[in-house]
Image (cartoon, rainbow, N blue to C red; front, side, top):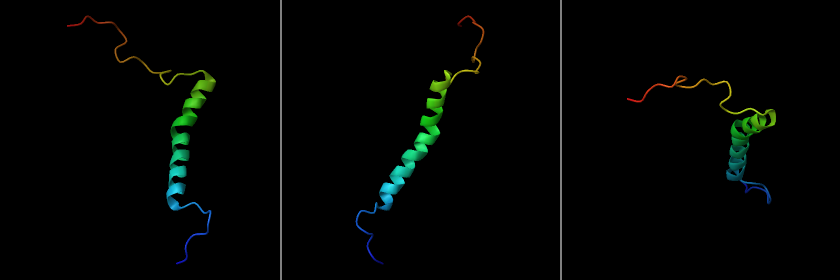
Length: 56
């Protein structure tokens, strides 16, 4: 087996870059879309306890 060509990124770098791209697709893109459209991550959700009740 011959060594990789000079300047070729090793598998570790490619794995890190792939992880960063995956993170951006899963978390960053939806966050940006919500900001662009003026929505919140809680829009459309109902309250856990919509009526005020006395504390016991």
